[in-house]
Image 1 (tube, rainbow, N blue to C red):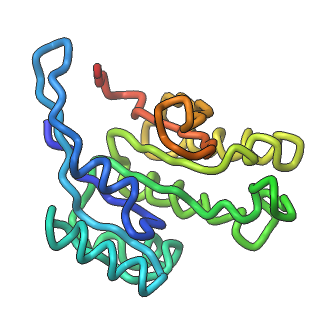
Image 2: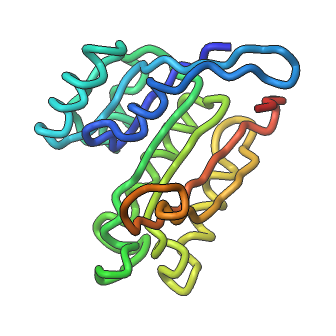
Length: 192
């Protein structure tokens, strides 16, 4: 099965690069799973130009310079449909070194663009990432709200797995801790 991936807040394309260069996977049932890039959206001109040159030009797909919320409200259906979504929504209001305003901050609400894309596109699966501090924002209420909205998004809802990864434990030469949330649509029986 070929998954068609769209990415919001793509920046220069970290999540997309991993997806584009991942080897196809053979499921326990003998089905081959692979990923093809369809579009990446970011409003930063330098980030989207980097995405275009390093990913879209090499692996396909379209680099879209636009605000993610506006894209989801007005443009998402102007681009090819996706069956997978990636979004590393802005972390400014969740970071332990910031003001930790959570979903009430200027950037804290931007996860909703990802939820809107899930509602609009109803992809088979998604992956979202954010800083470790998201777990503590608003005494944990922000992360609970975000997970609740992700879980109930789309036509069928999603089964979620949320886990904190400490990258230094995987041989990465830096201390970078991130929550990764994977959602698989409840009506799909995907076995990896």
